[in-house]
Length: 210
Image 1 (tube, rainbow, N blue to C red):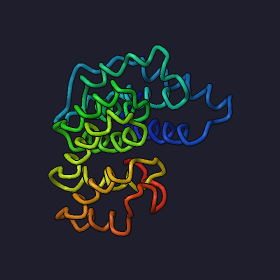
Image 2: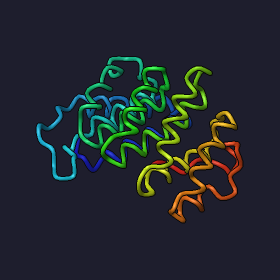
Image 3: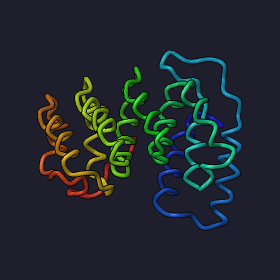
Image 4: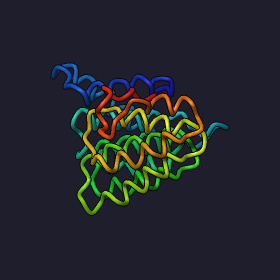
């Protein structure tokens, strides 16, 4: 499947996660996504760190369609060792599943060399914090605070966007992250958190992922 279809696969995955498709549509999407996921990964990487594979977004769609515990569940290690798009998909998958192992994956990806990967991991950590057990929250929070101080604005913007979403996280934890974001040198980041209270869902739905 051509690389330009990766965006379409991710849009479909987001839609499937929000509301189930009709059964016949879901079956057709499952067939298409499985075919894309099984395409061999090109043995090359371009100057921008991409190899053109659509496997990652295809696995995202399979997971959103309810196949996350099937034969595609073991594709996460391959995505972690793949190109930038693959690692972004790995972060999104881990952010949806949010098991203790997935939280570890998100913490690692939050230090990735590529801002796109770190941004996806930051969003996943917000979601993980909402459901994390009490003993897991300090390590997740530490990762979020590190993300909020990330150089540039892409990662803090992604973090701020996710804090506007519906998942509930401990108020004090959100307050700690917002404190860092409110002092960010980027006016766009400050604007995104302006008006947000310590409750993460105080200002409406999260901004869609790019």
